[in-house]
Length: 326
Image 1 (tube, rainbow, N blue to C red):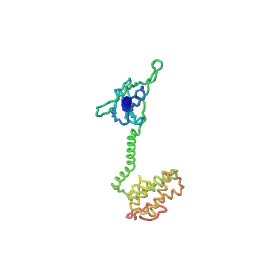
Image 2 (image 1 turned 90 degrees about the vertical axis):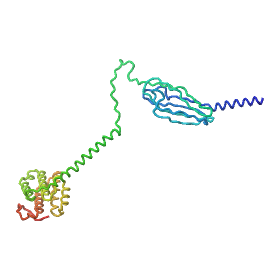
Image 3 (image 1 turned 90 degrees about the horizontal axis):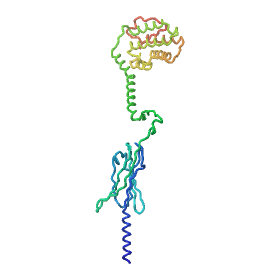
Image 4 (image 1 turned 60 degrees about the vertical axis):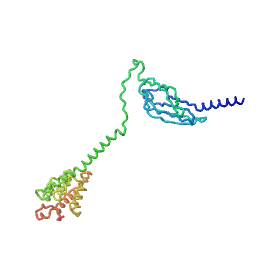
């Protein structure tokens, strides 16, 4: 009787041990049907004892012909009952060819002293379908030809054009900013000696401007334009200050750099050029006394800054002249 009971216990333990070593491998898709280009997961599941070491080969590129692997595997492990664990591997797949496909069994294997043992899954089926654009009976309705799809422009595609535009902008800015200076330096390198003294030319032009009576005829802006041009040409001939392309501030700065002192003559020139800017750019309408005052101030500036060696020469008389030199 005891031997019988012992035999039964041994048989039960053997059955329990063999059940504990049982391994189940399964494989399946998230869905059995997809459209061309859709993406789904291919799952491999292993139910095994926790103390059993299994190796699962890594799938690459394709599961079978026309079913492509996009990414994976991503492996998750969870604990089960009775000392078992569950291992799940997931692959992201797609297909661009319609048809019915069957993926062969996948396996997990273990190797020990007794040799190599493999555990296989079942076959996995997938149907890849085409998208139906028109109904089966095309005579029921005529569809327009679909225009090509315009994908949105990305920052990477725009970046080269942005850099080209910025570069062109820098080149244009550099040309505008520095080309006049290069021209000016070329002009300065070739010293021009006028046929007549600078003050003689300036006095003659001032007399001509006075006789035109521009501001009396309502042409105030033209009057101040010609008045400042006479003074700027005088600065060029007398002090080599090429101010025809300079602003008032740049002209005064260049004059000081040439050695001119900030005295009464400097203030006279500043008054005329600044007053002319108000008329030309701010649409200021001066009264008659201001027009006469600016003319007299211009005359006095030329008179007080003429070259010393020709002071003895005759100078056209003008009411309100005042003597002076640089």
